[in-house]
Image 1 (cartoon, one colour):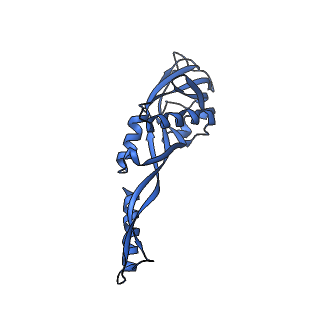
Image 2: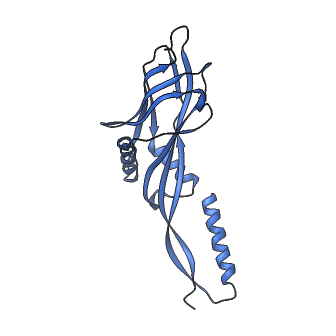
Image 3: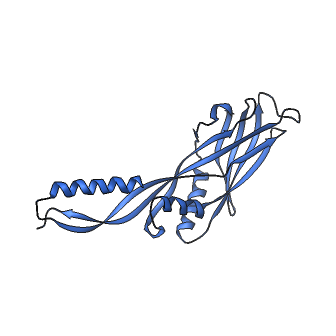
Length: 204
């Protein structure tokens, strides 16, 4: 919405600047950049050991359809799209702090890669605070392949999973389980084409 409003204002200013002169409008195809964001469903973590594997599905088609709808864009207008960044954040913290080490993996069909490594991550430090992830190229490639398949008419579904290896300062137990909820958010860079009538000041 904001992108379209800003462009409308820019066109209005051009029109005012050229009012009073004979101006012919010419149809132009313009490439625009839209930065969309979508989040996974919450990962619910309740564990009594330091090692766990929590999967969560991510429907690429549903998420990209929502981004396009929010920006008034049709799928046919997309030239390219790719994952540019990701954040993770605790949304329901544990009763006391823990530090975690492990990986976040991504699976698409037979492709399986690590997309994030985390080491000694304090849960209280990211309680309500989005932490930017250092993305692994191999995992990003898997995500971008799913985007390419979506643009080609497919309906790709990814699986993200937390594969935790260590918990500090002490391992969780039946008496002291680790219990929290977190979410990951992905930022996707989309280039689209739109047609606009631009004033041609060299005619008339």
